[in-house]
Image (cartoon, rainbow, N blue to C red; front, side, top):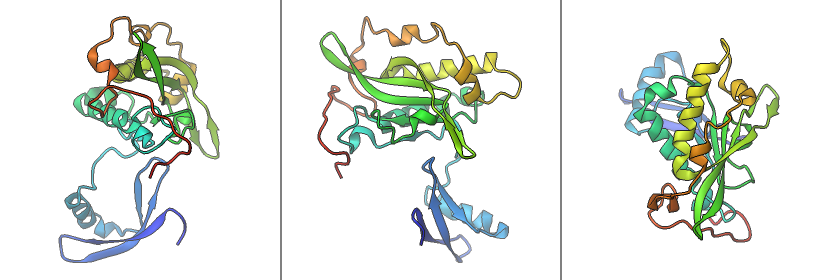
Length: 234
């Protein structure tokens, strides 16, 4: 069997079983192949019963991230926590997601880019800054990256934003796209050319940090950087 593929067997509501091939994708989704149209409804019911039928695949709320500091010894930030926070933000404000439904957002916990942040419309790279002698998790925001059809373009570094301010930064960038895009212009193309000026300046600054600014998303204790030799801690 080819790499990235495996057989799946699902029991459906009518008692029947479907067997086929599943593949993983670069966006961290799963594709079930060769499903007959007549079987789609019962297959969906089986996936829903297994909590595997969440909507939004390949949409702005389908955020890609590496495991981050959860298991990687090189990662600085908890990128999975950031991905979960952004997804919650889009679910809480669907009108924001609707302004750029195809926008790609990808997150890496370090410059290695395992989350593919360099080739995302909005790419987030985990980093750290010192404020009042303490470590604060932050993200480098890369804008305008894209890939497809045998080619890729890297995003440009546009800002360095503390982790807790990233959801607001993403919302502002989407609103800027909604206001100033050309007719039919994809968000990645707009963000590649857009001049954001001082749009995120107040979010980058951290002159008066809050207690939560020193805690990474997905964590409940003070942020600290722990780096070791090698990558995977598994």
